Length: 521
Image (cartoon, rainbow, N blue to C red):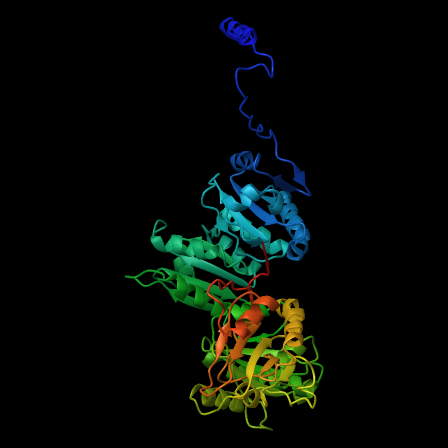
């Protein structure tokens, strides 16, 4: 027997440790020991694969942001995230905020299916397998309130009239659920909805004296507000109970003013209201003659609550993008426009008609009754529309160019403000350069925010469509990689990608985007 091996066996029998490197075989790699504490930066826990388990054990509620150092959206979120952590710390809240450097912690990004940055997930009671996706705002108070409503009760329990009145007096919009049975399923439905309605304050009671105080005899959700009607009631169905969708729509509808002024604070709520019809009054708020129109506009609103959202747009404020969307100039105010947000069809009243309560009411009824035809936006055809490599299309020359039977026309529908459109601009220009000597190929673009086509509604930017030569008005939508090589294969193959080229959709920006921006991995 080998002398060294014999020595090792004797040492093992005597219980003596074997010197490193002298064992009978290769040593198994040791796992890194878990960290004993979780480090912090600006009040935010810094997580890795080694300390996540410890953090989940130590903190019952934990919001975790997966970020990338190179991500612009992550950098924009960082100061608000730190402020939110400070707000929660000042309240001695049980909830904590944490972050994970995604590119450095690939095991964690894979475990939690992170595909874009920033991604935020909420962990409760140490449950590592089913975190909740974060759906709240991206500013400090909104982040903190979203977490509060999950770390603690989402509604204040009310025992007496004094507590109820204090809650109602303390906020512009307060929602109180009156339920005779505290264990009823409707209570759970109410509390679940309260977790996400961050712009409203919620209370809950089963006290008979409060039912009597507010004139109620059955389970009811009551919205109290310091404007318009002051109160709106949503009785629970005795047999079916509370429907979450119906209750959510009720609260959204009645928590808004009958007339809402459009600005950066109100626009998210306007788009989220799920009322498809919007009536907009464009006025210059610096002019007294325009301000006088607001009373009549508001007078017309009540009968249309829940059916038409009344919105005021101040053309003297930073609302040029709204004017552009409707094809208007500030000098045209005061004027009305009606839009259906689902179809994006726009309607205008007869020219010169004053915006009185009677005319506003009549215009609404006429549009809803199908008596008014929609209008389409179109710019004038530029004199040099065909002089550049990428041809310029507008509403007025689109049909003639796109459906020219002698041409293969590849069109990019874009928005000037769209990031994805800007990112592919160089590739589109290079494609036009490559095919500039082909008489049968045109590479073109159309600003879809300033030109509308009834047959081709655009729901996201950029949208790419190919109009092959020949009869039949054939249209093929392009849904693959946005680079010159793949574009060329598509064109050279008559509007199809070769079989070996998989369709790989790229991100696009919605026309009325309300979701938070992320950067794809």
